[in-house]
Image 1 (cartoon, rainbow, N blue to C red):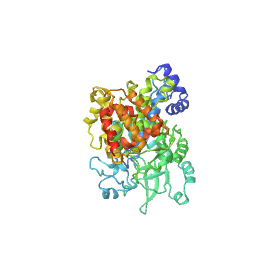
Image 2: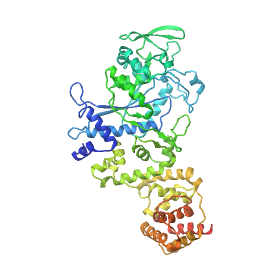
Image 3: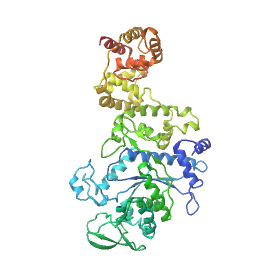
Image 4: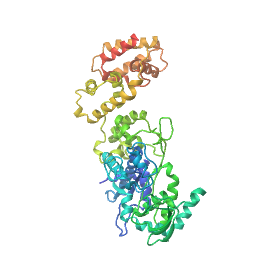
Length: 539
């Protein structure tokens, strides 16, 4: 049940999920109505090609679509009750295998089945009835891991069962009109062989890329050439599939899809498929075209190059929520996807989450953490915060070294948060493990402390003298204020406080950037920090 203040704010919110939701609400002039006049579920769809394993692109599309879905349930609510919706995760598993992926076993076996529908190719992993069934199972496990609410739909199931037959019949009826849309978009050579319908060879089982002649649209009978023979057969019941852009349009038509987003690389497909679905008698879904991911060098991510970041890698070094937070922002802008963005994403998520209770609805609905919590039905977590930032954890384990242990970190956390018990801080406990992994693999190998120059050495001696008279347990704020005062003194020669803090980071921590030093010293301990200073002065 949504209160009136939330609904009112949602309908005027500038946050992109609500902007997308309002496009849908205007499409239906409020809520979607069924044939009998009652409110009907709005259908959201995401697509997946099971020739490969699920990846971050799969996650982001389901996540972003879910955010729009939840936003729509609010803006189209009636009497405070959420508007009904459905989310279909559609697997295009009737597609023919074009090439053998690099990351699978039994490549020679797969090579012998090139061109066949993915559900009719043996599973190279030996665990499921087909290659597609294996990858579909992985997709569902993947989506279940993140708690997505969805319905799985298989293209092969729909084709084979005859559920798509009426839509295929309509494609044959509108064959010439579809050709008139598609042929002008193709090169001359491709035009000669293009067909909206791809028959499955009764001889080889391969999905054929050959021109066809429609003999009887109502019965689904077509004629085509197959290995030098002229074949006449029915395309119904899984004996054919459709060319990509036509298939997408047919799916929208057959399922009644109302919303589907896609990447910028499919912009042309959206245009042509939108025209085709109208020819079929349907309506193009609403949707958003999002920008693609870039690697650390600003180049487009390619699965064949392997220059991306897998979801397993992100979850090794960052949390699920931080990934969602990173993907929420600016979907229409290209995003760098590399290890380096993880620490900031972790801390930003928690900063936004802690801010939720103090925000009015207009600000709250623009808060990424609110959207992520609401999408997962975890609104109760709003306002939670971490006692120690992820950045500070990284600095701590960086000082402790690549061999640091979970227990060591918790011993130091006791300096900062009192009687630190992992059971009382489960989110922090999980982040400690990720900080240890991130430090081990990316930070520790790069850390290199430099010797201070004479002016920096004088400032470090003054800091050490202050700490000598400072008790363990002194507040981080009091320590930070003294660090500031030392850096401001003209005799130390720092042009700005930034120069002083950079000197502290480079001489004590071995990095160019670092935390608030007051917080770090309170966490690491006064005596331990004095040892760091002594080591720096002796270098």
